[in-house]
Image 1 (spheres, rainbow, N blue to C red):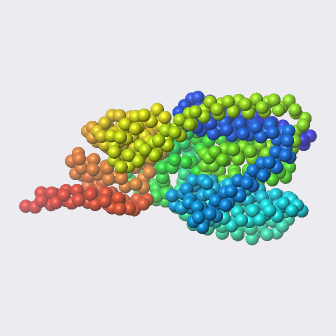
Image 2: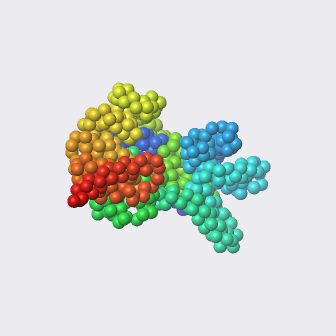
Image 3: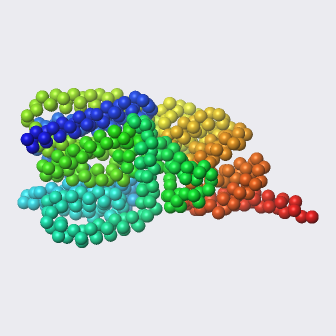
Length: 542
């Protein structure tokens, strides 16, 4: 009976993942774009890799598991070597802040990969203590633990600790219970240290999750579309702050901590919430249920892969591993290894079903790949050529180059902003506005609204400009620039009362980041204000 239940649970996980893929297809059909194509490709890759490994593992469980373990070991040793070479300055890092990132572009995903491997190796050691090879695994895991603090990824360390706690509690319950108070104290200290180490960052992540949850529950049934997280988040944050301020500019009505940590993220820093926002709450629940089924099956059979999947799943609460190719292969591999922990010889015909799903997924991945290739090629051209011309102020060349890229990069916010702003500077306000409007719907960056406001101002549409500047401020109310633009607008209109009121706001406003630019903005408004005050003084003299 237990075996039948296990088999049915495996089939249940398979069906749910297929359903998740179908929902993703439906959402994609409802709102197509090249960014949506790439997101769908990533999701179909997960489905395809999962069913490929389900097919292999159903027939060759032991040998395939060993091959996967060997591949993981080789990748781990390679990444470990790169990490230590970066620590000693022998090899350059891809990160702009010179953090340790291995072959990745961000320390978070690199830490996740190292943490996942470390957990697998520690569990393997404890389950195979009597074998010679187990010594190699424990040494490799110790080296990884030494490297992890240098990566400075709190999420990776947390996911490692959670997975190890579950393993030791499940297998050494009596000892864990004996030292439980001590363990809790240690975990509390580590957690507090991680929080206060980068307190603003931690507060920012919590606030992002709060806004994302609000976006999730005010969402359509099938979400806002694949790849739509950034624009949806920006709109939700706008509504949150504008309602808190009663659609005024009185930022004293909102929580000061929330005001200062608010940002315009391009990534969700929570894979599950992103899935829910883009393809609906049901899609998110199905995705989580598949992971839960896989972990449940693997834990019951004492499969080491369950702890690797736990590590990845905890990390995904705080980051975006599913945006990277490596994890879109590693995650479904772990998922299928957990679901296939016991060889199933009773359902040989099921192989045909697995093969059919794999081939279907592969066909769709191949059909979508040209779209990704075209996007990547155009993005590379823009980054290496057109964007450099934009930064150098060669705007005629920017327009010439951007016209050839618009069909490929129409859903890439940085391109739309640079192109739209260039057109504004060249005086083509109507075309600039149309491009910036497109960008404002898919980006959380308030600068789109600032430049659109400048377009309105140039066309003499003062009330429209005012609303756009206010929109920018509500989106991220810790930036001085929208208030500066409002002050300049009222000065242009000759509205003395509103200018002086806004000038006071500019002078007393505390932005998230103080810089030379913020002081220059204040200085300019002070000079204009001084002229007003001088005029008022002369008028009041007898």
